[in-house]
Length: 177
Picture 1 (cartoon, helix red, strand yellow):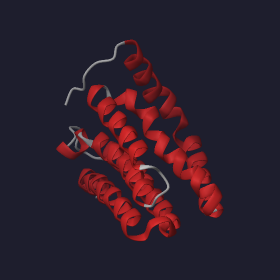
Picture 2 (cartoon, helix red, strand yellow):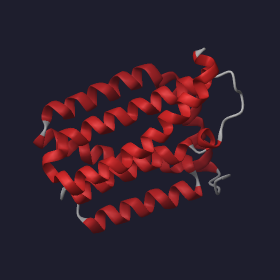
Picture 3 (spheres, rainbow, N blue to C red):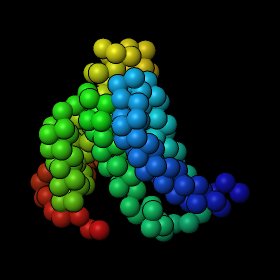
């Protein structure tokens, strides 16, 4: 039964990631720096939806991806932009720096999604470094999650994502969609 509704659930998780991205921006605007721990928990929840939506979609009986599935990379991008929004509105990152970083992410995403992957990590690294100073427990929770994810997803990263990144570096091109 799960495989029957796997794609629908995967799509819902992907959509939830976009909503969580907007919530991160709202946390920065309404809670500021004091919402740092909450922002990290929201980010962890969003990262978890990223892992789960892929697993569910691959196990789905439907072999052709839905519109949301074909545009799942947009949800990944919105998470990175949501972290930038949180960092700017909370006062941890200067607005011009956030604007440049967001522009670079958007431009690379539009040009070649795999080229944007390394840049997506920059807001996460900034958030991690800030958390080390102001919420160390949450910083180490982030680090533990990333370590576990790397161990579990490492083979797939090496098998699928790294070759795509290398191919994009050799032959950068505009996105297909």
